[in-house]
Image (cartoon, rainbow, N blue to C red; front, side, top):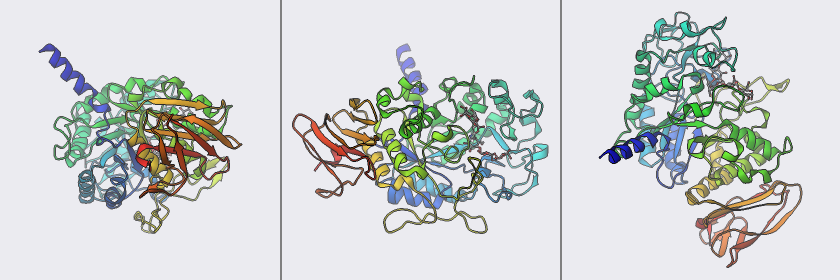
Length: 512
Ligand code: AAO
């Protein structure tokens, strides 16, 4: 009996680390700023057929409307209430999206902004996305309701109430982040309001949450509101399933707050991953791909089963947050595809693919003065829909990295090799590297400035394979390069350093 109880307890404790994605679906995509109606369509027409496990959606709750600058993307990180209406759509549209995505096995992960409300200088009135009244100066949010008692002012000891020093964990957690009114999660009332919001979403059918600004809350306070959460909706999930939790904790080292302090609650975002991978692929600081042999914990990252990983996110692709200049984005498409390909082939962490919109950059002293620009929108501020071009790319300035052939095919690669060990590493002590995933898949990179011509052990069964980077298998033919694996598992790989994409990937589902 005691053993059974113990096992049950262990099972429950582990649950929030599980992505809840369907078997054989191993990645999610962040459809940053997309409308709910477009996400519903994308689940049905593209994500489900191509093996995506889920979508991280932008914050669905009511936010302040900022008009100076005009409708920046970041207004959605300034909550006014927990009503579900934003530029992405209203509650009916949100429910319709969750239902339709869930019905095709693609689950929804909500970006939960619960550390704070809007900025202290947000004024008062009804300039909010559902029209709820609020008064930021008096910390009054009647649509929740929250009042002055529910904020941390009494606990913050800095001169202006702001976080001034990331070396002091008390300020980071009890003071204001960028002027944002800091909720007092030590209060049971606040914990209850946060849990009510999250439970409302769980009951609609969402599968998990990104916890925004988790670093700015005490781990025990987060645990307290997570402990109040329901299990997932049994229309789509086995009874007793806990929501997947990944916490935004920026830990690049050198600060007292670390990712590991949050493990009891769920996974954490591993920001070192994109910062380091960008440095390696750019060949900065003397880095080279050969050093990736022990990628993962060997590089000082959190344990694989506690990590949520990504090459770039909505902040560091435009100079917000952390990671610095090394971060690769769609603006550096050739290197970016290699980095995302490497991430999706490598077994470390649970992977999130970024999907962005294009904006006009304006660099002033190395900083993008247009880092605020919101999603493609009409003159009234409403968000433009995602149109689909004849060649399957997106229109209206939506970049849709997740639809790039190389990235989409590597999402499928990761599903095919799921559970297989990291194997058959090879490198030339420079920037030509290769590795496999058991006997299911193999990937080869040439990031050197010279031609690559090598024979490698792939670990794969003999046969002719389609490279899923230059093309893919269609019917009984390859639309791109072919790779011949002989009876002993070896194959010859030739990759020009001037190829559009200087890498090759093969897997058993793309064998002729
Ligand atoms: C906007 C305006 C502000 C205004 C405010 C209130 O821009 O001027 O004061 O409204 O009116 C987003 C935007 C903000 C925006 C906010 C609200 O990014 O610009 O403010 O919405 O509209 C920290 C947090 C992290 C946060 C990140 C942006 O720790 O949680 O800043 N990310 C999330 C979201 C983000 C959102 C919020 C949180 C707020 O993803 O979109 O903000 O909901 C250090 C610390 C990091 C810290 C960074 C940046 O990083 O470690 O924790 O991130 O500084 O402050 C080296 C170090 C590295 C360091 C980095 C930068 O790399 O190794 O540790 O340098 O110094």
